[in-house]
Length: 219
Length: 299
Image (cartoon, rainbow over all chains, first blue to last red):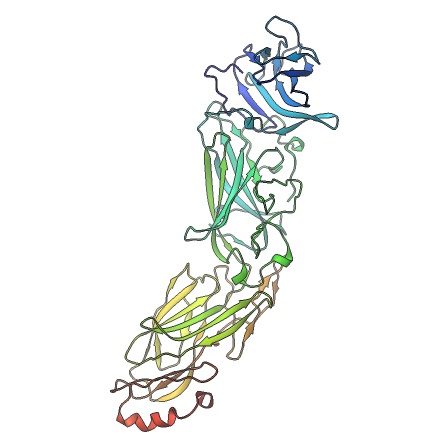
């Protein structure tokens, strides 16, 4: 991916992938260390952001989906079609038009049970990142196993009495300095401390390696 | 708690944008928190676990006494930390009050210059699931010196306990430590105390835990105790009368106050404490009568 400074940023994640912004028409290259196999090409004749290409790595059926792209051909102009092999450094295509902002949507995927499925966070395979804005945890809420009511100390005068089985829910987001969007969190976890600051329970980080961890709600 | 795929969410359409995202931090594997188990939806932070496996709801692992609970009743801080892939971290803390047990006085100490005069305690037996009472003593005490009474509670209290120790003894104001679990006050025999030997109970009352539960009333003869605790619905198990705790009994021998020499205290087989105060010649005859008898007889 030919970014001007050669690094990968956390522009947008994690809506089953990351968005890497650049100008429409910028060349997208196959930067893997080994050859890939073209598995699927979808052209978008109207160039409205619906084109994408799927390339797997080696002999396996795992690899990358490059979304919102166009012009799927190598540097010599030879079109990419399923089954062709792409070598490291070869041109995949170009960034296409998008109604909001031009970018490549990158998914880490695998063929499984008749579908291409997202299997992980692309950022785990793309390093280093240089973004420096820390995530924001706006609130911490608690929900009893016997209740559907979320309780926040901020909503209860700072006093929340809990017992039994509890879910701890964090209202949190990461922020891109580029767009100001609220992005997903990469990892999140909790720790419990006594009033004197000593730890009762260690930090239990939840790695958001899949995108199925957050709640289906807004508050 | 139900966990949905964002792909099935109405709010997912159109991307995340400025939406608020809510993350369940408790649906992980208890043994290995790095293992996310979003499909095992009924995983929680079991605040009453006795196990290191903090999010394995299991009645068999639930603590039956606050002494065996991994997360003690009272104030705790829950800190959530979020990180991005570049390693930047943000966090937020929330103070909560855990309330899995009803409070009781778990121990008493009466000391003179850091030397035990009297001590009792309720010890939890994990196999029996109940507390048992033991007491020890006595030491030497005189009415010319200030003693320290320390009360240990099973969890923090909202306010200082109200303690009475008979009409002949003054109990000073309490100060707390260990996050309001331990309370200490000075104790001194009143100058106008009337000569005599009498049993006195340390009467503790009027205090509540941070959740508002009153102190358990424990009588003079109780030797085992099941601490009331909540079941999975929040109802109390092993309910107990609440009110005044009079379990610690100390027999005080008050002779002539502020006289010339001291009497060594004695005790009976039930660990009731005898306190000998300095006395003068006028009291020698009374002293001889009093200390020739077992306290079990007197009390």
